Length: 120
Length: 105
Image (cartoon, rainbow over all chains, first blue to last red; front, side):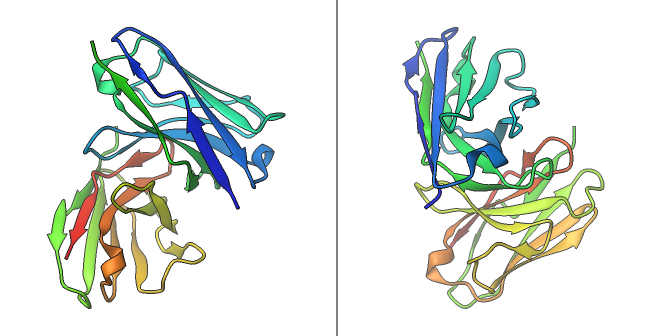
């Protein structure tokens, strides 16, 4: 069964940093672009970032560009999201997603999410 | 930046009702539009790709249509398990989600 499991979410102060991780199983990881989508409490979905299958091209939402880096380790079936300069409005559940149709982005496998809380 | 506007933001319907959710793009996106279902406390699920292509395993009571700037998601006969929030998402250039439509019974 295809599965994505995120980790790394935590309570952090404004200005702090976090590294989110996602491990994939049951899917051909190296064949797909991967990404992150977040959801603030009680709010809608917001795409955050995408990385191509070979890791050479990355994309970011305007809201996180310059503060965020996505990367992947194809030998370990993992994708990462480094969040720096965290702000209160970065508080959200962060979902790891498989992008099955990149660049015609369609997110067909989702993890259960990891919670990031930014608060003093 | 392109905007994706869903309506209504919420609706109440009865089991067996036909439910229609709309999604409007602020510029032409041809058929570059996906639909997702998110049940309470769960991760979203991809329902429809490219405007009208149903994902494997999605019940046939779900359908999508539209092109250009106006799209619809239709549930032909609402079932109790369809209670969820539905999101559209454009996928030309960077992905953007609509604000969501909460479907209640």
